[in-house]
Length: 528
Image (tube, rainbow, N blue to C red; front, side, top):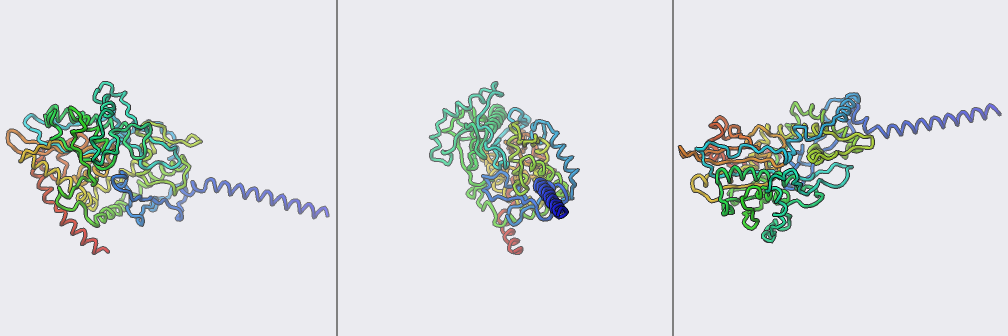
């Protein structure tokens, strides 16, 4: 009897201990399995799908940098990556954690953010006395904006949309901006698409994708720079009759409209909203069929972009860049307490992180004190820049870019030709667009600096006549740097900073978009 009870009690104790151990093991597995899955031996069952949002181009600045455009062709991060053990990942995490640099001290981040107190002005308008300026075309990206893609599990709210002029107190043009905008009657725009939009950022917190106070400041300062070079130095347009000589095009998005207004305020000797020749463009690349006399896009053109995406994924550097990206991903997942499936694609991560980096505000941290650091942002940038550079070098993407930008280049060439030989009234042309306006233009021109363009990036086309010979020349500048010798139509033909205008005009005229579109249609039929 005693022996029976003793065995029974021992069995119960054993079951209790075994049950407790089992519960403990289950709890630990639930706590760490997701990290172990990602950081240890790679599983074939759970992979990160990079979502592709089908947004309108003008509303989605990150569209160009998605790895795939169609839902059925999404990128799976890590498919080809080498297996990394947890010790290697932990070393990487320690490197991220120890980074205490302010984000704007990192060159790549600072270049993208382009803070208004550190902007480089550049060489626009600086030419020998023998060259007379006849016309200027400037293509800009809007200024600093609030993120379109917010980071999951972070506090709701965006950066300030108020304009802080404290660091520019010595510039009356800047300090007077708000009062002059407030005094401008927007009734003058009542019959236009712009009537419903504010002239400048004026809210304590920005909604998604809105121009910030910094974004407005960037373009005021650039406008002042262009005014000094083109109005004061070259007398390109008149002090009072500028409304006949300055024409502005903007996409139908508030941040590009407000960027154009800020730029004009800095540019014009006497800003007057009633006089502005402001035109809206429904095309992100500023192609108008009435000007171009042809269709602005081809059916099936995306086929070339999709081919470029696939080829870039087979590039030798793809696997290596994905290793670095996965390490940053893993750390972000821990800090934000996210599951793998909740992480957005690289460009969206960068967009959300840049809001913190560009405004020098504290990036998200978790309760254990682990924070997203400048090193994380730098690592995300590497993967984003890798894609844009790979696209830039890819023959299929180059065809895609040339077709998309042909309408704008045709417009510039046609306007310059009229200025050179017919003496047209319009002298200064501003196109206020997006990164998705400038990036394909950089590729089509075959410029060297092909990374994702920063806020308030600009491409400038100048037309000159050499007084001593009567010849016409073009100069091209990227963010203030003369790049004439790099552009595809002037390579090996440039004369110092200048290139004969005829090379540009012939190049644009020889590009037959209709013929190209027909070939795209034929190729699409063959590949069905």
